[in-house]
Image (tube, rainbow, N blue to C red; front, side, top):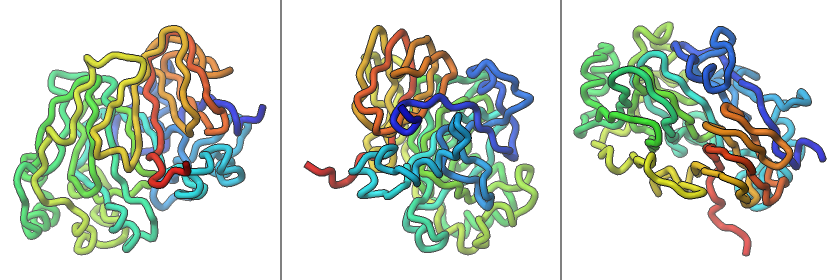
Amino acid sequence: MSSDNQPVALPANQPRQFYRGGAAIAALRDGDVAEGGPEDWVASTTTQFGKDEAGLSRLPDGRLLRDAVAADPVAWLGEEHVAEFGADTALLVKLLDAGERLPVHCHPSNAFAAEHLGCRHGKTEAWVVIGTTGPDPVVHLGFREDVPPEVVEEWVSGQDSAAMLAALNPIRVSPGDAVFVPAGVPHAIGEGVFIVELQQPTDFSITLEWRGFLDGPEAGHLGLGYDKALACVERRAQSADDLVRRTRALTGESVDLLVPGAAPFFRADRLHVSGSAALEPSFSVLVVLEGAGAVGPVALRRGSTVVVPHAAGEVAVTGDVVAIRCRPPEVSNPRS
């Protein structure tokens, strides 16, 4: 069997970032934080913005996953997915360990990305919290009240970090919480929050709070200029209750983690396997949080990250395992 029709275990893939972190990734993977960074891009066919290869995952045989998918998209993704998305996984999964609070930023929508960035995908994302440290692990998500455009412009031009942060909803989080972050909604992940992040497969960020994080304002607007870039900011008030699911107490072989609004972008489940569980055919990414076992012929342990091609068919997870299973969106018009 080739690696294109069976699950494949992947090593860490940690492109350089501007912020601190990574200890939680190293602990999960039983690795050395000195060799890593705050993000591990898992089964990535996406490059960092403006880079040629940084961010791309390699298979154990040396091929870029991006190239393997392009060479045989149906094997990796399935006929129905390819009919809608082509040789595009429509998914990027990361482990992200915030060793400091991230800056206030947001991401463009599909429509904004298509018009201004030449890409069909914007960057809607979701955070599945798998660990926290410190006395007050929080994320900041969405404006608490509607904000006029001239106020956002003033905050950004004056780099008023205190005002930007105070305008956002603070949400205390713990393992098992799942947070949906629609495109355009401003946000900042707090120090000590460790997540599995699902997102659309781009690296598009509009950084409202660049001072103290980026080299300068030019690095914060995707080359568009802030006059144009700030048009993607969702300035309407958001309700945290609409965007967060608290799933820690939920049990069962498979727990759906995300709010219904996430389904057009990606899917995430927490698997609780004791013995054996069959997974329906799908391109998917597994992140093992606890236990040991196997997925098909591939051994699993805490910290394993595995990409499963559609051609693996109905694959079995065996052993005693808790894992996050990440999948692309369902196709909008499946064939009967």
